[in-house]
Image 1 (spheres, rainbow, N blue to C red):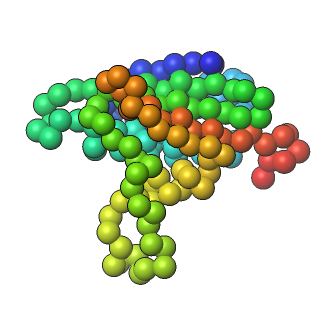
Image 2 (cartoon, rainbow, N blue to C red):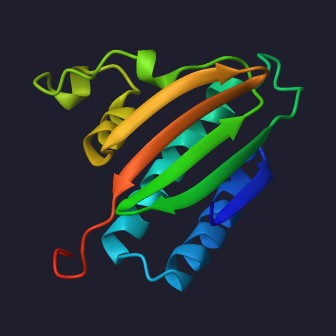
Length: 144
């Protein structure tokens, strides 16, 4: 593991989380395209955890953590939150053939993450939602 970052489940902290991850990925010379993918994944999953993981009355505060590690050519994000059980992978895939004005809100972020990830899985571990997202790191000559 390269780093574990823990923040309160608040929108104001998502940018702090991304800035810290960006610094770590820069330090380890991770390709710019992968850093952009990490940003998208973190913003989407943090938003989901904040939107769906809290108590219905919004009174209970929960925390978010992201572990990031590199295993060969795989960058693994392990996203953990202490909110209510919520598996974003259980949502149906969006109907991309339907006109955007007629589609229900939601679902596109997780769909994009599925397209970017080489592997993604969810589990409920005690009082935590755990979502692991693997992103392939291109070889230096493969970067776009």
